Length: 199
Image (cartoon, rainbow, N blue to C red; front, side, top):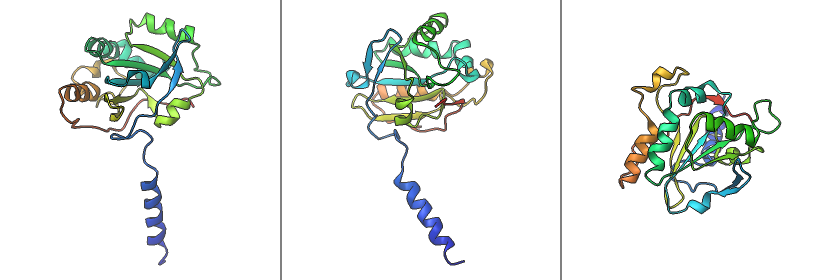
């Protein structure tokens, strides 16, 4: 009976000792992943710029919501025009039935009229694990010093309905708007929603 508080305290301490791998304020883990053409892309190559990491999976209805409504492509184009580097990452493991080859992924992105700086194939899921990416989509914003300044959902409408995009509070746009204006990000972390990452 007297041991329960001690056990609870131990669990809390353990939880505090294991923070999220890429929590806001932490250095963003570097990576080198091949894009759909086979060219290696390193996060550190973009030091000095704002970077958005978008985890995706074309088989996911939550991803299709944001592409079908043109929401994701709109963000890619809007911020790409402002010199923000947008990297779309598919970390579906190569052993999973939903895995897309580089050619399949490139074809799908072209069909969506997507406009990221690069589409990356993380077939071992190693980069997703480094970031503790949980869902598709799961979004990260990294500042020019290489620190994570936003981690979480794309917006506050946790559904697969494309109509819900209109009027949603877009956390990624808000974070980028504040950060690029030299202001602190007021909402730096939210709970991501979507399909589970296919590790």
